[in-house]
Length: 135
Image 1: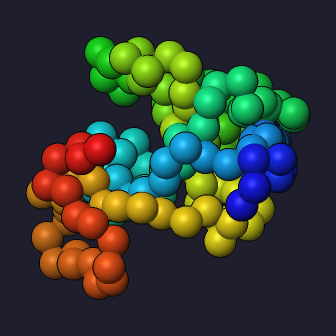
Image 2: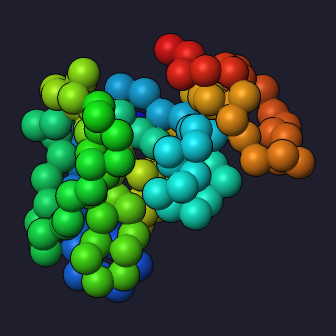
Image 3: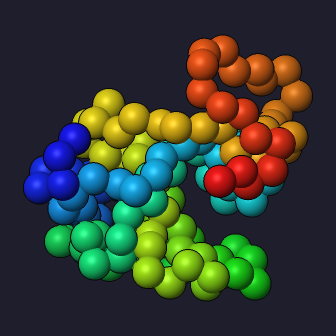
């Protein structure tokens, strides 16, 4: 994906839409307990983008402070979690790229927090696996 491309996505019910201009700086799969608990999913695909490259174009998400260091934004109607913001990284936003219209546009680079994975879930493939947050 080139830096001038446009990615669009939104929630399940269509009440919230967003766009990303340019390529993510990182992408991967998170297996941490916070992501599992806030979405009910075993693993979450996240793409890191500069905050200035991300904007909501329809609707207003609700904000949930899921920890002392992070906030998650979700649709108030259908509950779809759209993104996560870390207080330690205010210049970026972590987009749940499963909510993109075309998630195949993103190429993941690693599995993080793999030590917290759901028992019985093992990944195959050649992506690096980090027991913690990795880098």
